Length: 99
Length: 238
Image (tube, rainbow over all chains, first blue to last red; front, side, top):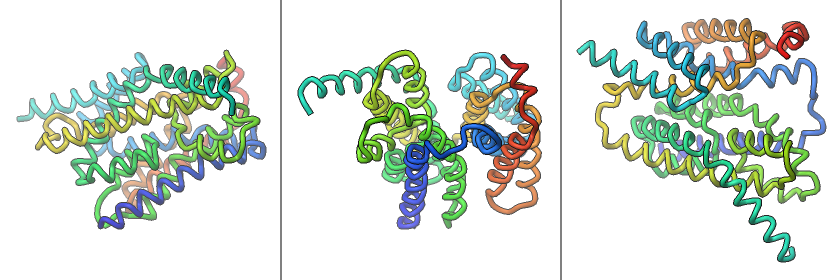
């Protein structure tokens, strides 16, 4: 288990470093316009979104409500930390009320 | 290297460090959430610290911790990290002008401490004034310190709080990403690809075993953006 732990971390670290350094090395050769560029630009947003959607749905109505509140707060204030706190607080509240 | 350039490098390093203090506060805060989640999954502080120092990528580490169930799915985790961090190809490429005139060794060394935050602050500054790669490195040190500090505090708390569900802390993961995702929102042209992403992710999660839905939704949604006709939105926005 310990070896597996450090193997996973090492693999992730190598992959991440190769992307960082590789980007700098390949800078001259990457398409700066067109479909490839648009694909790469869209990727961070869609990746995060596909992480969230099933998890938000699995938690039921309160979870969806908290997700919506977090999203709205983030859009309005641009403050990641406050938005996160709001979502967590709504979930905490819903569980306290259910007790 | 003479004395004057050494001095200049130090000034740049310090300026970069100071400029990143603002974002470091929120990096530390959401790092503490990661520490909490990691402690709940039984990941030791040594492993967590190794992750911070060697990977140093917030969203990827959150995903890793989320996927952390024994036996560790090595291939799935590595692939997820690869896809999530694909943006670093672009980030690295965009730093090319800053690194002009530096040696390969210098580049190899300095690129490791590039995170979203210090990259964004460096790029914003680069447009206005003459800065060097030491400014970028100073920012990286600042963000790394906040990241390690935050995750370690969170990890410690995770060992103390017995029932984090009661405080809604299991939701922190979804909340962090929901708050972060809007920094990638670029206006109306994202509506259709994002809806498509949500659809793919939910369907994928239902019918495909494991965590592949992350890649299915992410790649499918980004492909949707790439294949949609370009132009009409860009004209409208500015």
